[in-house]
Every structure is written in structure tokens, then in C-alpha cells.
Amino acid sequence: MKIGEAARRYGISKDNLYYYINYGLLVPPRAGSQYDFDADTLADLEMIQALKEMDYSLKEIHRILSLHRISGVDNPQDREELLSMYRGKRAECVEKIRHYEGVLRDLDARIEALSREQSQPPRRTGLPLSMLGLLCCPRCGKPLQISDVQMDMNYIYEGRFTCECGYEARVDDGILITPNGYNGEQDIPDVERKVYKDLPDSLISLFQRAYNFMKEDLARIDLSGKVVMETYVNAWFFLHNHHQYMSPEGFYIVVDKFPETLRMFKDLLEREGCDLPILYLADSSKNYPLRKGCVDLNLDFFAINEHQFYADDFLMHHLSPYLAPGARCIGTYFWFDGGRGSMKQLLAEYPESSPRNFSLPFFLEQMKDAGFTIQRRQDCGYTTSSGNNIGFSFHCEGEKMHLESYLARKE
Image (cartoon, rainbow, N blue to C red; front, top):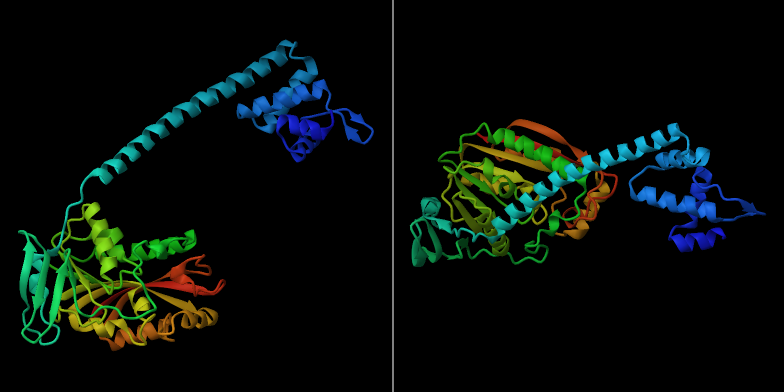
């Protein structure tokens, strides 16, 4: 039988058969320039396939074939060696079975736990009554009046906020929506979280270093009774994956220009059983219906960069009036080391973007100008590839994009 016919009959490629021949597993006789797969060679091939099914390595298979070829396993020593190989493989399989039985138990437990969590109805939340004192009219600073309310003892779910000066906002499904909606064309609500998809592992590792820095500083701050704010969560959202590190005695404000994004995150946090008092605020203007000086901590995960995709100014100048004296800012800023090609691509994709975005000197200068002293900072490293990801589509392969984590204090 020629090698091609043997390959077809046994469902194995000719290249594999040649490899077995060169390795010495198969020793077919030759007829001229061609191999002849006779009955003995085919028997060897069948044994090879059977032993491979039993997880023997090619080296082990070679030894078993050699024992058969030397003595037909009639020699007691050869027989004992072959028995030892079979017994060893059996013991190895028993150990694997025990291991995989444990793996199956672990997987079953994880599947059951996740299924149980999914089947439990989420706890509905709304605008916390405990945070009403943080609200005021952004035009005249006076207290807001509320009407048409649907509420319980903890939350407002629906309602209207008005001021005698003419300002009006509404609560829709527990989200405070101001009249300052987003009217641009450069951004859309990312409710499917496409911005997180196709991120390379190396970039996610950099994210984790930044997370570690931020968590380390959070652990040093007593958040009981404090107000924490995070903005631009349509891009990246630190609090969502780290709410377990926040004090339930604190108060939290989550801001984005898209109500759809806030509703998506609100639903996710409700399903996770997050019990933090959170005020979800939909506003794209930075003229928030919040009391000046009410925020004690601002969380910035890429928010300063994200703001500059759509404006040629600095986010902290807008947020500074809402921060109390001595307020902290914990965050991470992305910057290019060079990055000419990436910045050119960024400005082409985002015509509204600032040409000073992703600039570490600009960031440091503007933080100081906005009244902040940077108390601690750390270069978490850099990546030269952001993968096929819509969040960093402008990043040119090979150019270094750094993550700089920082802790700042408002003086």
C-alpha cells in the first residue's frame, strides 16, 4: 500500500506519516523510491494511533514499539518493562480522573453560583433621599422644588425638579436628567461596552497597575460621610468594578452625558447588589445642579483625556468649583511619549479633540493651574499596541502610550 492510500484509510496526513518514518516509529520497506506500507507497518500504525489515544508521548510509543520489535515481548524483562509502562500510564490516568473530578465539582459550583445570581431579581434603586441636600439650581444656586414624585422611604424614582428662575430637570427611573443633553455627533452611548472589547492582555495588565495605585490611595481615605464623584463613565468607569472598596457610609455621584449609559450601569450595579447610595446625573455641560464645594473626592480614570476628545480645555477647571477645599483627586492619565502619528490620527478621528491631549507636561501644568498639588504619581508603564479596539483606534502601532496614576489635593 502506498503512503497516500494509508493516509486516506487511517485519516492521517502524509506529512505526519513521513514524520513517523523519520522519527523511527514506522519502518516501512521501500519499493524503489516509494514506501510500501505492508501488513507489519500498518499494524505498527494502528498501535501508534491506539497508544496516542491513551495519551502516550511519541517517545513512549517508540519504546513500546521497540520492545515488540526486539523480542515480541516474550522476554520476561521486556514483558515486565511493558507492564510497568502500562501500569504507570494507568496510575497517571487515575490521578487525572481525580483531578478532573475536582475540576468538575468546582465548575459546577461556579455555574450554580452564577446562575443563582442571575435568577435573583435585582434590588431597584433611585435617586437617594439622603443626597437631596447636595442639589441646587445651577443657574441661581437656590434650592430646587420637586413635584410629581414617585418614591419610597429611600429613593426617588420619578419626579420633576424646578426652580423659580425657570430651571427644570427630571428624574427618570432614578436618574437625574438635566436639560443639558449631548447634541454632538462624535460620541454615542456605549451600552454594549465595545470600548472594552479586543483590548490586548498587555494593556489590561497596565490597567490593573493603575487600579492597584488607586485602590492603595483609597484605602488611606476614610470615605464615611464623604462625597465621591466620577465623570465620563461612557468611556471608562472605575467605581463599577471597585464598588466593594467604597464605604457604604459615603455618598457617590456618577456623571455622564448619556442617560442610556447611566441606566445601563445602574442596572448592572443593581444586579450586583451594590448598596452604595449613588446619584446618577445625566449632564453634558459641566454646569451641574450640585452645591459648590460639596465633593470630597474625584475619581478620574481616563476622564481628563476623554473630556479632551471633545473640548480644547481642561476638565478639572470645570470640576474644581464642585470640590471642597482639601478635596482629593485620584486618577490615571494617558500620555504619549512622542506619539506624532497617534495624535495625527486622533485629530482626524475626533475633529473636536484638543491637540494638547495625551501630553504629560500639559496635564501637570493644568493640574497646578486648577489649584491642585500632586502628592504622589507613578508611571504604570506603557504599551506600544492597543489592539483592534475602538477606544484606542487612533493609537499607532509602535508608539508608546503611558499610564500615569496620580493622587492630587485641592489647595
